[in-house]
Image (cartoon, rainbow, N blue to C red):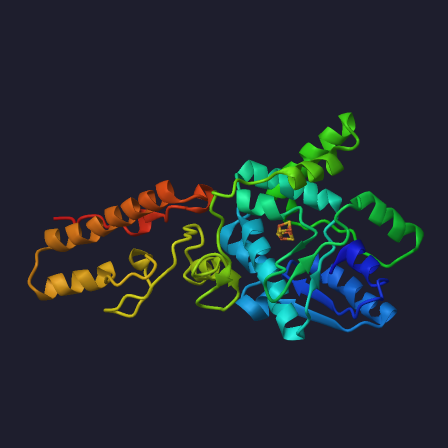
Length: 333
Ligand code: SF4
C-alpha cells in the first residue's frame, strides 16, 4: 500500500492490517515515498514490511533501466511488482492483499487491456476481488473512488502522503491511457465511471478458452504459463539479453548444461548449437555442415514461433526472440 491511498487505508481498522511496501529501487522516487511509508508506520502504529526488487531479483529498477533503456522498463517494473507483492504477502502469511487502486487506475487498465486485446485481463480487471479460488485473493476497496477525491481527503485531513511522479513514468504506456481519459473527461465528466461500468458489463463467450492459473515451475509463484513472466524477464536480464524478451521458456542444453538462445524452447530436449558444432567438428564435419546445422536451428526457432503465434489465443504475448544473436555468419574463406 503506497501513496495517499495507502495512508488512507490505515484508518480502516476493522481488520488486522499490515503495511506492505515494495522498493523497486528508483532513486529520487521510491526512496522518498518509502520515507513517507516509514513515517506512516510510526503515525498509525502498524507493522511494516518492505520487500525490494534487489533482494528478490538482484536488480533495482535503476539498474534495469541502465541495461535496457527507457522503452520497456514499465513491463519489468509491473511484472516484478505484482510478484513482489505476492511474495511479500506470503512472507507475512496474510490471507488477503488489499491494494490502493482507485477508479482512475481501473479505467486506465480497462483502456490498456482493450488496446492490447488482452481479453483475460479485461475480464478480471474491474472485479473488486480477484483470485478468490487461490491462496491469496486481492481486493481493491477504492475501485469507485476518484483519485482526486482521495487526494482532497488526504489534503484536508492533513494526512502525511507523497505525490511524487516516477522519474521513468513519461514513457509509461499507462500515461497515454491516462491522457486519453483526461481528454474524455473534459467532454464527458462521468467518463471514468462509465469506462469501469463498460468493463464490468463485458462478457466473454463460454467457449473462449482463458489461461489457466497454475504455479511457475521455477519460483512457485502464480502463473498461467509453466514459467512465469518474472522468471523469463529475469533470465533475459541475467544473460544480458533483455531486448530479446521471449515468452518461450528457456531450457538447459542436455549436452553442455548451458542455457543459450538456441535452447530457448520449452521442454527442449535438443542440444544447443554449440554442442552440435562440437559434435560435428569432432566427427570431422566441414564448416559448411556445422554452419548449416547452426542456422537451420535458427529457422527452426522462427518456425516454432510462427506456429505458436498462429495457434495462440493471446497473440500479443508471443514475441519472437531476437535471432540476430543466433545467426552465425559463414567463416571468411
Ligand atoms: Fe515502475 Fe513504470 Fe510505474 Fe515507474 S512508471 S513505478 S517504472 S511501472
